[in-house]
Amino acid sequence: MNKRYAIVGTGSRAAMFVRALTGEHRGTSELVALADPNPVRIAVHNDRLDRPVPAYPAGAFAEMIERERVDVVIVCTVDRYHDEYIVAALEAGCDVLTEKPMTIDAQRCARILDAVARTGRRVQVTFNYRYNPLHEAVKRILASGEIGEVGSVHFEWLLDVRHGADYFRRWHRDKADSGGLLVHKAGHHFDLVNWWLDDDPTSVYADGRLFFYGTAGAGHGAGKFAIDMGDPDLAALYGEAAVRADGYHRDQDVFAPGVTIEDDLAVMVRYARGATLTYHLTAYAPWEGYRIAFNGSRGRLELDVTETDHVSAEAADSLKGHREPGTASLRLRRFFGAPVEVPVEGYRREGHGGADVRMLAQLLDPDAPPDPLGRSADAAAGARALLVGLAANESIITGRPVRTAELKAGIVNA
Image (cartoon, rainbow, N blue to C red; front, side, top):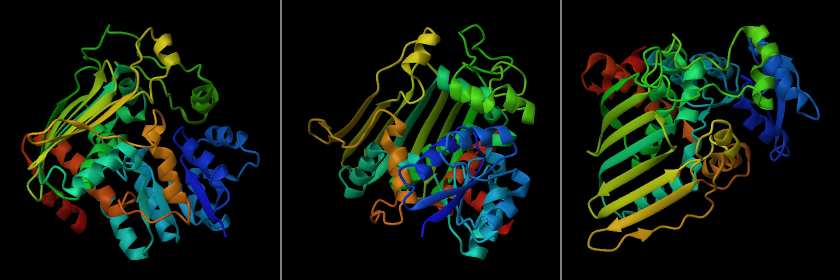
């Protein structure tokens, strides 16, 4: 019997799940309902289906679960509301797939973990970067001991001005909605390091500021930052009809008041077995990608990636900009030896390196093969990634290192 899925939150991210459930995975999964405060966005997704599914206002979430006999809820809402729907779904007897981050603060995290323990139901966080073939290769190499014990990790992530600006146009610009980039965006990256090292973060020190965007941003006059709302998908989901329904404007001015998140962030993390992570996120770079290096007792592993997922050739042309060609290099450097380029099969230039398709196959296919890499992230993994971002946010405010045990105690005792 097919599992019955409902999606709450029908913005652009929901489209990936709608396509999967009604396309490649329709033989084992069934999309049975959509819920959102905005009926226009539900209608956009339903109009794309051969057989539309029942639509529910977000306030009728519990009724939807009961009436449609939902087995699994997929949560794609604004981050600050994740816990509301996750907890309600668990208490109604459903399992949950949730977009990252699992939630945005310690109190909400405590609610989710308590509900998991009480109900015995399952929460999986869609950390799709774990399924990128490049990242899987890193996991295998580190686990094999090729570079020995890891002493330090250096991780730089660059969002180019087209993609980076999007976090300052949308609801993400308000930390009360998203937790800031250290929770919403870097949560992906902290989860990767936690997973790669198979270790727990114990202390975090961070600094950051709003440098490029915002009312006093240094980026004033640097170029065009408005998104093209003439794009058919954006116009359908966030155009005039959708705005009339809930008042949400998708294309806000990145230099207008209301930006409460940082765009330039530096973090240092200590892990339980002694390794350190130095991490930097820049949201206004001229190109998009990331560099990671692992220093070990027997050598060094380096990953360099230039991403093009969010910068189409058409977008580059429309902004009179440059589109970097997508590249990826994984390099192993053993002591006293020449560097070795590690070939990686399955890596693609789109879909987060091919990760989205692989993740959906693992999460939606009841006959998916065993996963020796442990890529599926449960609520505990979601909380562990969140701890780093929350500790970093607190460190920026207080100017002092923050021990994650302090936050864990708050979650456990909440």
